Image (cartoon, rainbow, N blue to C red; front, side, top):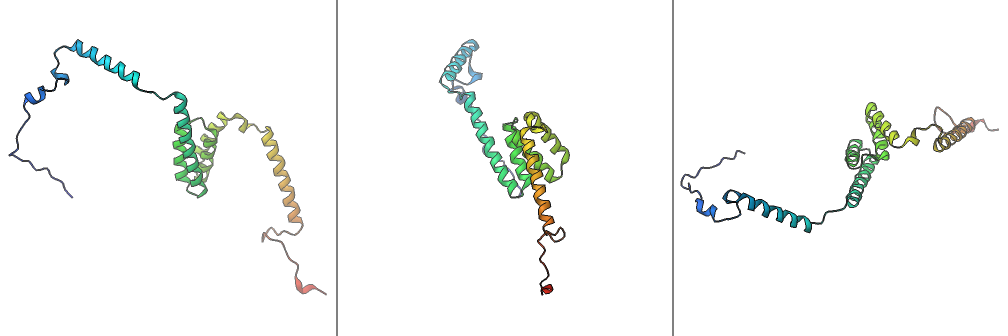
Length: 180
């Protein structure tokens, strides 16, 4: 669809200077610039006194709530397998709260899922810079995880030795024709 502007040659009316000059507050009509500057300063001062500015704490809490909202949306998208959309929500949350180590760690996991190992490494490195205890191999949490993993490995070995088939991934049942 093409739009065209029609020129109306019959309507060549311009406003007269008298109509413009009847408005005294226009800047090009003033004769005394020092008087105008003082009047403008007084108006700005009065306006700034009446204006309520939000405190820094209120802004921080608003940013934090907004970031948490984006994080929750990203979590839901990631659970649904929509990794790129989740990554977008988390990026927005990180723009609001760049020091959020949990978000950076989640971002690293999703980037690994998407196959972007280098960006995942950068995000994980930044997360461990913010939370140095995550990188300590001998931290209490890491020791607990190691104990749990070794316990699970022992249970798996017991299950396999008691008849769990590694090929079929189910328990083997004896042949019923061998009875008697």
